[in-house]
Image (cartoon, rainbow, N blue to C red; front, side):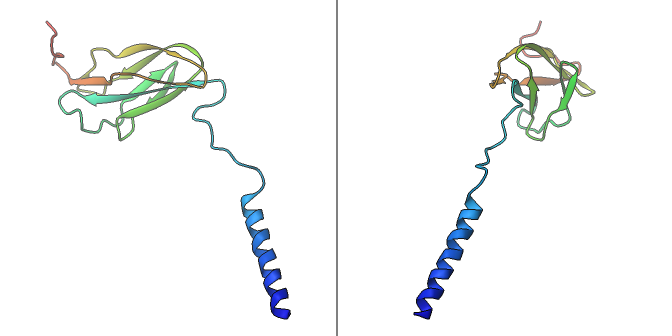
Length: 129
């Protein structure tokens, strides 16, 4: 009898522990971008070595500057509308197309379809006269 009472008490404690650990609040994952905004993602690569990591390249959007990460990528939040993304090439590199206009929509991510390609200063992209 005492054994059954002890087992019942133990079961109640375990059940309450599970309920306390699982219940309350129903947390949700944070949004990808702040409410009322969208985001822009893209990459920066070297022409001669497209698989080499390009870090420390500055990307500007509406006066806000971010730096490319170790995987060549960047992400920026923006209000809905038309925005110009500008890449500032590091010293000794050139970027034939340094700016691009993108349209941002609320709660969506716009991925720039082609990477920004850095060329060694003085070289021309293929097909340039």
